[in-house]
Image 1 (tube, rainbow, N blue to C red):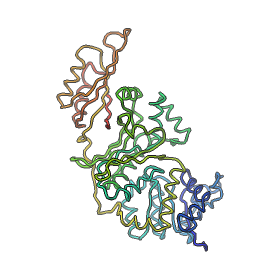
Image 2 (cartoon, rainbow, N blue to C red; image 1 turned 45 degrees about the vertical axis):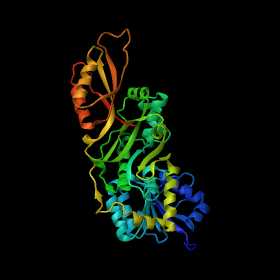
Image 3 (cartoon, rainbow, N blue to C red; image 1 turned 120 degrees about the vertical axis):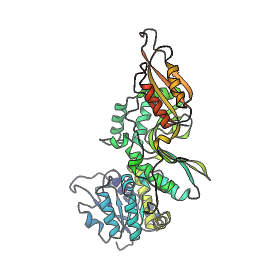
Image 4 (cartoon, rainbow, N blue to C red; image 1 turned 30 degrees about the vertical axis):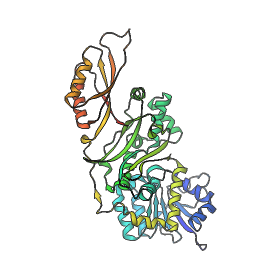
Length: 436
């Protein structure tokens, strides 16, 4: 490019790639002003070069030859927008070997192969930027890496999966069943045709692994992060949580504790009136507590073409200006000699808990349950028991909801196992952590 423009190769022209193409082609003057020179798309890698493209993407030159695109001398920067770990990993390594800087929003790639990819980028003197990988348009990578650099991070509590947040919001606010809420999320483009990685907590676990690296310098294998999804949360528990003054959210959490770094992804009760409780629909929010700054909250759209494109193009501008290279070297992320962290044992996690039992409506049942909890040093904070109604036969099953004071997870699990074996209890019990 004889006008000094920075040449970009897009690996992938799906939702994110098309969003990036749209922003670069619709606002060239704005991007050039902020990057210091024009930024142009040289070409995009696609699976099917003959497939019709929508607006903005239709004018992008496409190819199925990844190596030829990556090695094009006009390309100085490669944007990986493929998703997944392969062929994304192989192509990113090839791009680095070809002397190109890389921008990615691929959380699975970084969570699973961060040490390898960052190590190779350092060895080759290239920059790698990844703002869009955790929360779409929410600039949490910049915040943790730069804005909060003076702090020791104490805890991170995050809503980082818009699909789950949309589903839980619909079920809680509108009384929609899980299947219908999921179908609506898919219709609106908030959920993939196969939503498994979203609803089972895998997506949030990938993002938590990145947050743990940024906030605590911990190299954490995603497989070691305990996770529970939202697909098994009964609608009844959303209602009972509301009666107690809480809303259920899928939280990705990392906390420094005496037992070590606590990491978990799970549905938890969040008290009404707190910032995370008010995050609704497809929005993301990350609450970060630092020893100097105190409590901070970062909020915005975490999914979709344009929020993520905003983060990716911001990274492109940083790379073109040269800032990304300085930040990349200074942060030293995913170093092979970095802190290899195993999360604190899940059984050691201490929390308040919401527990729901289905019990026979007989005298003495609550006392038996309280005795089993007390034997494990678990004290009761509050109880809800609904009347089965005058027409119900004697001994009909009724829900009993108990909120505990802070207790060790292993003790709670042991107590519930014992309680579920009582002949007046219909197992299984439901147990959710509480975030105050």
